[in-house]
Image (tube, rainbow, N blue to C red; front, side, top):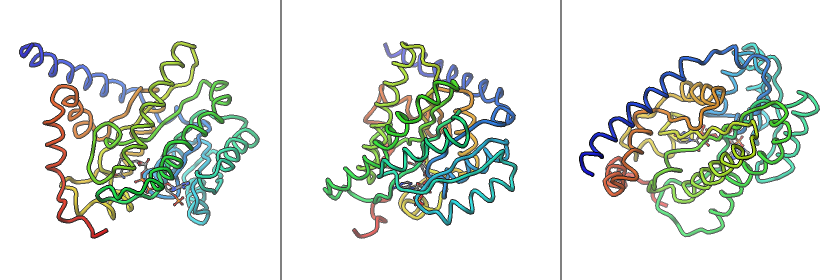
Length: 293
Ligand SMILES: NC(=O)c1ccc[n+]([C@@H]2O[C@H](COP(=O)([O-])OP(=O)(O)OC[C@H]3O[C@@H](n4cnc5c(N)ncnc54)[C@H](OP(=O)(O)O)[C@@H]3O)[C@@H](O)[C@H]2O)c1
């Protein structure tokens, strides 16, 4: 058994690395030309960067978030970068009316949808779990239930186009991380829902791909403000992260790991040496630097 583990883990790593790098080579920006894409949480951070990449590739971009003034600037920049078209719907993902409106705009003004990128994330705290059940409920509504609602509403259009659903998750949705208890719960829920749904699509021959994106620490303004002092790791750039998500969704990959070495490789330990992985995770934190609650 020990020998099997010693051989199996490196071989598995090599196979995964080969699959990852060989599929990356097939991506061409022209694949997105004229494609109709919704990006949620696009007023800032990774979502904003995805909108700009898509615009450069000539996609029709429909962005959403709550802050209309910021979205307006994103739309203007998308137009300047060469988007086939750029438009916005502002509103909170806590409100089902926003999800309905987005889908109606895609249907009426774009004539359908090729890719749904679910990326938005509600504000949470970076600290020990404070016992606030109401906050967990609210975050589940924003980070999980609205992803489900968007998927249900957009599915008829995605079935027609043979399209893709891209779900932006986190290492905190695969491994127990400290100081993000409510957030982690919502990200684990996404994995359960979308991995199950992918199986059903396969059984029913539904030609809609589901790509789950497992991200490490990324240098967005909000993430840096929340965690940079406490985390002993350097963040990866949001621009590159955004591009890797789009590549993975376009190539209909099952999962995207960014950055690969700091996300996929540690996960190889999860089923074989979970306590070791937990220990390695804890060593990347400086709890003494947490802000007083
Ligand atoms: N950055 C990281 O280190 C990191 C690591 C792992 C995973 N991720 C994942 O990557 C994704 C993007 O992260 P990010 O760092 O780019 O986030 P961010 O910069 O904080 O952006 C979050 C986006 O969600 C929108 N949003 C927040 N609450 C909303 C609500 N109630 N309704 C609708 N939209 C709402 C925000 O816009 P408004 O405020 O205008 O609504 C904003 O556009 C998230 O799913 C996150 O979990 C990030």
